[in-house]
Length: 289
Image (tube, one colour):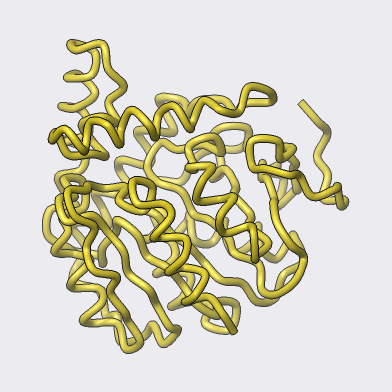
């Protein structure tokens, strides 16, 4: 594993070749990868439950990096990042803000997927000058319907995966139609494209902490989304089981500058991965100055 560093390195040709780097923040070494152009406002990607650096679809990262500097990172205590994983979304948001500032950025765009979308909402509310635009995918507001049931759904589908010898993502992230199964297979194959310097899987203790944070988010009083004034693009599949798709409709309607991408047909929680070409094109259009 490389020593903690934030010094520049050559831009990789693909996310699968992007080196894992480290930046120290208050005694914690945050693992991250960066890819793409140095021009413009950097785009920070905030990941989903249990995800590490290798869980981002390389087609999405490479597509966005064609025109933007894209930075992915491991939450505290997750993957190659040191420290103990927080059990509240608010603490994750504080960590992310400190990570961004440690990299020297004063203005960023955010793409939050699922749990990462919860974190992005908190950052946009508490650090309005830091966030220019945000993309919220497969996510919902605090107190949104069905979010408190993520633990039960996740555990059930993890067991289902064991019994069927399949990755639980088949069930958690995609529909069970022929098209959905094909999309799941293609996505999981893309995640294997990186063969060197792969990240560590999340630990059980960190996974439990994240589940606790998500449950707390789901049982909070409804959020005041009027405090988020940044332009926000909302995307999801039409059949999201983890964060029910109605939450995306709610976000887009209640955010002062919210805009909904028509829900992706026959797609679940990671519709932005299943429809990666369409999503990247729309996201880049939205992120234009």
